[in-house]
Amino acid sequence: MGLIELLKKDVRFQEGLTACINCGTCTAICPAARFYPYDPRIVVDTVQRGNEADILTLLESDIIWYCGECLSCKTRCPRNNTPGYIIQALRDLSQELGCFIKSKRGRQQLEVKRIIGENMIRYGYCVYLDEIDLVGHPEQGPVWQWYRDNADSILKRLGANYKGDGSGTLRKISDEDMLELNRIFEVTGAIKRFEKIEKLCEAKVEKA
Ligand code: SF4
Ligand code: SF4
Image 1 (cartoon, rainbow, N blue to C red):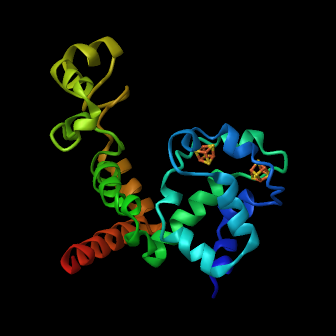
Image 2: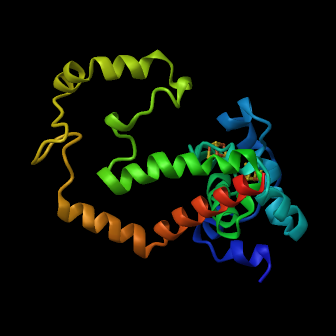
């Protein structure tokens, strides 16, 4: 099956692409286009033209990893396209086919998986205070260190129930709910996807 056919099977692609008139409104509103070599209009035009070689180039490129998925483009497109959804479908296919491994930004999915993905599986939260690695993420700046140093008073002021039983912000997610969450990750194929990302990245390191 061709790449465009695979994309068409994705509900986000079906929803995201109606008919692009190349007006560029999405690019004008896109925050990622302001900071990166990224142009959602060109992405939409590429998939709309349906050239397999061009789509493969997209799947193997950094381009599809610049989008912040803010969906500002959805609100402004005069033809009801959603470039952000198209990007989500492209990212999914890139991971499924292993194309992401050819892109530096694509390979950053390993970190996303190890941090956000594994936090979800372990704790039920994508960002978990105890797991913020300050040494590994200097780009977070001194703010995270400040959070860490003042966690008790911050959580108290927020009225959080950090790791506590019962209800409340940042509470411990019950064992029953964690089982259910893990089951969701399993039946939706997320666990398999995680394994694939690990395996492909490991193979890439061994090859290098
Ligand atoms: S705003 Fe919509 S119609 Fe205009 S270029 Fe972007 S996707 Fe195409
Ligand atoms: S969803 Fe992506 S493409 Fe759309 S405006 Fe946001 S960053 Fe840009």
